[in-house]
Picture 1 (cartoon, one colour):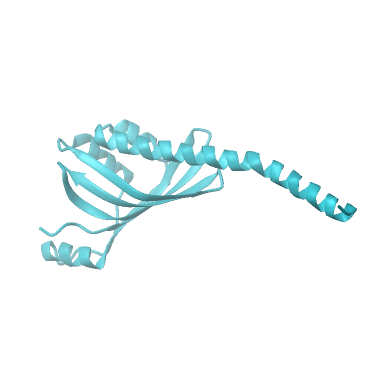
Picture 2: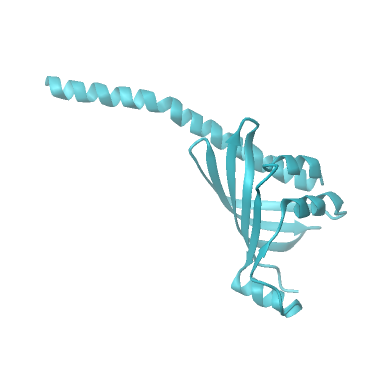
Length: 165
């Protein structure tokens, strides 16, 4: 093998070797994100508002939902003045989870995680069941940040398609 080709191959192999730890870290970070999602689910199912609240950044979080076109038609059938895009809050959701006597079950599908190890975007399809009946469904996206305490949710935005009543 000519010398320039051997040097190029050596650089390529060094680059692959150096890239391996970063890839392993991304895998670990993705696993950490998976743990955050599982903790969210468990906190909702167990009506554990304190645990749920701890999964979010303590300040500066955002929470928005937007009705799908079909969801907006259904919602306006009940309230003609309802807005398509609605702000919410972590506190309101934590209170709902804490105070509800119903069986709550947030289900996630088609999970996609993109991360660089510091920030992450998690997107998935969801169905929110109350007492075994779907009460809402759509697409949800979380923005996460990894600080000294690990991954925390910074924002949640989701589309909303309530069922036909």
